[in-house]
Length: 540
Ligand code: HEM
Image (cartoon, rainbow, N blue to C red; front, side, top):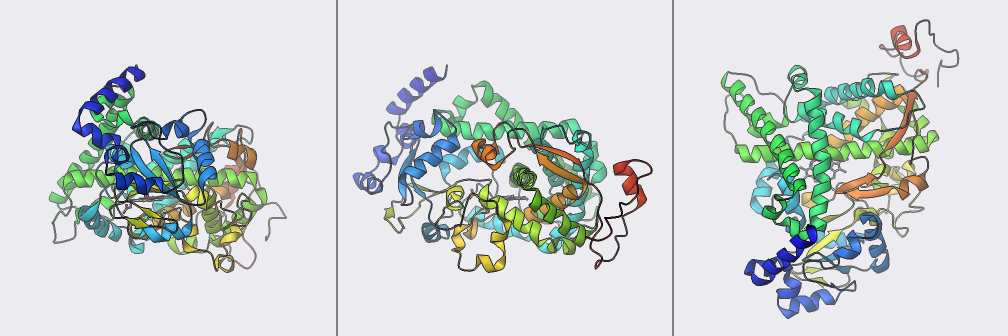
């Protein structure tokens, strides 16, 4: 079926003017463009439309194929034809520095698929519209706003614990990602949509799970379309069963976003006070002010974007739990710190989370080894000078943090999980663009502070309650690396598998004041009636 479609599409492309655009400027643009692209080393494109996709997409995992290609041509910048898109791939911090502040336009070819799912929002907008949205939305991530979300983050972390409790028998190996994706999704419902605890529970868990599942499949589809460029023609894609499912998921999420906006508007008219959800802030509902800055389509786009990006923090927490399972000594340090700073349970506040310096380093190191977006792309709108040459306007560039983050010239023993490499004294002298998990420059991640706070609150809640042990296919670093893959985001084929068991209780060091919430009932809850504090747990 697909090969017939491909032939049909090629014929249409060859006879239409629009087809020339689709086939890309390398084949149809001025000779100077082709000359400029060919000045870079790299594999030459074999066929119009497909470019070098065959080498990337077939005969192995996309990630491993991609890394092999990069290993062959880097560290110099090299050309690669991602379907019709002539691209220059960069891996060196100096090159990132040269372009990242100047190139703010997302690569149309890739991000058009992202937009079909995220909607028209900050992550996909360009030009003046992006600048306006970015300005408004940045306010919604002010620390005074984030401070108000910390309770939600902690509550969701506890609910995660309640949900996985039945699996935490020390023996059952399970994929922790769907549980964390549910948690992250649930959190954004409350912080972005303003659905409070009671309203939120009115949306059934099954329906919320549908969101998470639909999203996972949709991310698979985003990548699939980029690697099968004829499916970028929407009319064609909608004819396929996957395309129909994809748009059903989009409609579900879009419809939900609109119903929340409508509901909020009715409540506003009825005089409800403005809350601190992203939606309220984006609708700019202030006492005495009812100006709506973004229209409904724009609001829906932003809400859909916020829902979609929750996969990122769920992914990083999943990687972090595996890394802690595989490094029990590091896990012990994380727990010691959490108990000392927050107490044996609860104690999560904006201020107390800032004390979790070691956990922060663990998360930073997780993001170094496993940057959830392993590559990013931008359109080159005017000729861009690199250390090795000039990328012509009309091409795109790709930045590949996963390669930069593991470059032995920049990172000592890059494949070793070593959170202390983020100690301030060890960061001195490091190139600022050698670490880009949240990108950098004007289009960096607007949600990074939110994500770090959320991950610290959830992780510190989980590790104090459960001991995390290695699971199937993720038992060692070698196994984890072997199973690494990319489905839009970095992932582990076979699942982010861990085991868990309730953690033996501890109390914080003698120097800290006794935790108000550490009661016999906690002991009894976790270890059964009649449990008492072990004698050795008197002060670690
Ligand atoms: C560990 C978690 C996260 C990571 C690693 C991450 C990473 C990134 C990266 C690398 C980009 C640049 C993407 C590109 O250039 O294509 C980005 C952009 C963005 N992120 Fe995040 N992100 C995370 C969590 C979040 C969260 C929780 C939110 C919102 C609540 C968020 C909202 C956004 C938005 C709106 C953009 C687009 C910004 C713009 O183009 O102006 N992210 N993120």
